[in-house]
Length: 318
Image 1 (cartoon, rainbow, N blue to C red):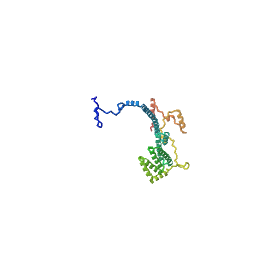
Image 2: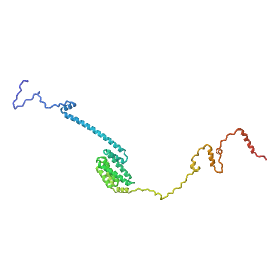
Image 3: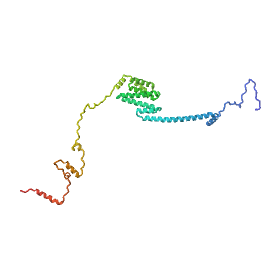
Image 4: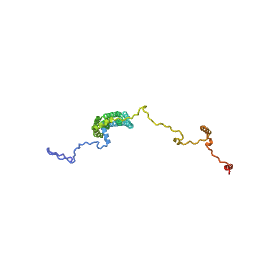
């Protein structure tokens, strides 16, 4: 019963078992945010730590503002870069492309503009090499200088640096600087071993070390095109056939092809001209003889006179 005294047990004896309705005191602390929504958790934490919450809000606003500013700056730089690419696309000569690079030094288009200008100069020098080796050497030297500047300024992992290094080797080869060209080809093969230019550079380096290559370039630079010169004026006379003037007679073949002009109406002034043009001793033809008039039909009374004319022709009888 409830009022019964608690049984006592002797010291040293085990304690009796706990009653089935007696439970241990819980030691787990209940989390007040466990049953809250996300908004409720934010409000609860803001009430507990207001300084931390508002600091996070201000930091987020500053971050958004920084992103907006960076985007505006990038948009302005993108417009300038786009204009530089358009200028490069419109440039045709090597000098025009160098001007694009000079006008846009901070744009990525500047490096490509110099690269394209150097390649165009290399092609021009190679084309002029058989006919004008002196001018070709100057053009190739200008191309090699641009390639060398790009190799020094561009990062090694840039495609511009690889193309410039390979172009520099080609310029040295075209200038007949074969030992330097071989070293540059080997540098391309060792610096960019996984590129397509590396395999070609190895083959070209091996080919230039053969005696045939040196002989070819020696003959190429020793070749001089033949010059055609005319004799100086006054030292020789050239015999040309006599020039026969074209006949002015109306019976010439040329004049026979021209149709005669239409007849002009008879007036008094042409008669005078005809009389003056007639040779001496001959009478000028009358206008009636020159242009016979059409005979008008005779009247009927003249018919008997025409019948009497045969009677005068009869011969006398013997």
